[in-house]
Amino acid sequence: MTIIDSILQRRSMKMVQGPGPNAEQLDTLLRAAMCAPDHGRLRPWRFKLICDADVVALGELAIAANERAGTPLTEQKAASTRAWLAKVPLLIAVACHLDHSNEKIPEEERLLACGAAVTNILNVAHALGFGAFWSTGLGTYTDEVPEALGFDALDYRFMGFVSIGTPIHKLGAPERPDPAEFVQQWHAS
Ligand SMILES: Cc1cc2nc3c(=O)[nH]c(=O)nc-3n(C[C@H](O)[C@H](O)[C@H](O)COP(=O)(O)O)c2cc1C
Image 1 (spheres, rainbow, N blue to C red):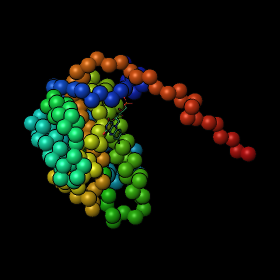
Image 2 (image 1 turned 90 degrees about the horizontal axis):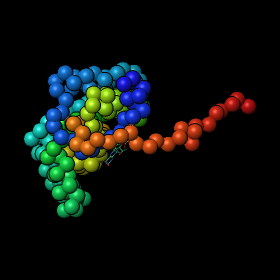
Image 3 (image 1 turned 90 degrees about the vertical axis):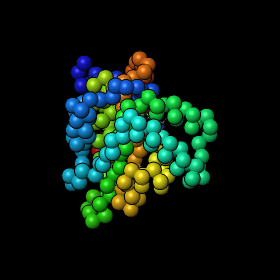
């Protein structure tokens, strides 16, 4: 498959199981992240790798953090979250380093660079045959979960988790919108 075909057929896949990426594949995924466009070479992306039993522990932390934050998951949502994470071999937690000393590059550009880094991970995971899914559940917007991962709110904007593993279901490429609906020609008047 060409890289173009792979990108055009990418889809998010939440339901995955082991095996996750091996060391070489993980290295490839992370190298792809380093290739994201990045104004000023700030390299604002930061990742924490969470594997196997630690994924389950992270899920418990997220459920408890939501409870403590006053935004508890329903019993059904907590159960489905536990069932999902019990099979996920790898989570990559993603944060953007804000670097307040840099006044030249606006914060949104760093966030965009991090989003581009995650997109590279999603595309390369798909090209390698893995299922991957970007989620801002799992207590992303609590104070407790980012802090437990080492991302204090002053210096980092926490951006959620990418789950990666072997797809459980065989899913084809989804329907995508016609680009014409989103594109117009601009002419100098
Ligand atoms: C920043 C970001 C956060 C997301 N968070 C969630 C989430 O918490 N839950 C969810 O179901 N989908 C979430 N999504 C959407 C999925 O990752 C995925 O993009 C969506 O299901 C569409 O699938 P596709 O990537 O195959 O088009 C998020 C997407 C982005 C870009």
